[in-house]
Amino acid sequence: MKITIDEGKCVGAGQCVLIAPDVFDQRDEDGVAVLFSEETPEHERPRVREAARVCPAAAIAMDGR
Image 1 (cartoon, rainbow, N blue to C red):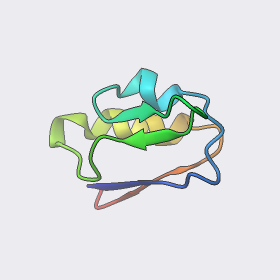
Image 2 (image 1 turned 90 degrees about the vertical axis):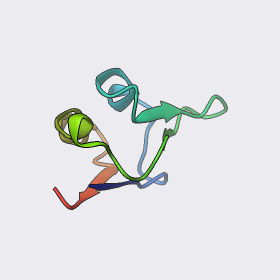
Image 3 (image 1 turned 90 degrees about the horizontal axis):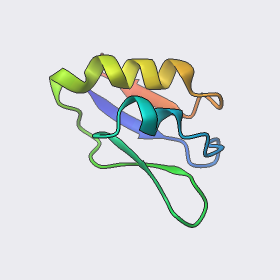
Image 4 (image 1 turned 45 degrees about the vertical axis):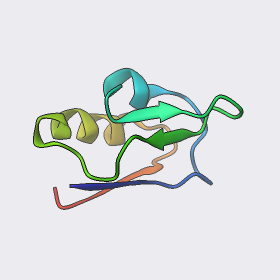
């Protein structure tokens, strides 16, 4: 599964980091979400789907569900 974050949409809520801390992080300067890697290990996929579902800005997109 490939993940992308639309940095222009991200509001820095941090829900993705709370749900999947091994996949997402936030930049210190503005709180925008960043990925550790665009490719997600299989065991993290349920958390990534949940993070995308709860993102208040709908900034997380997944390809290859």
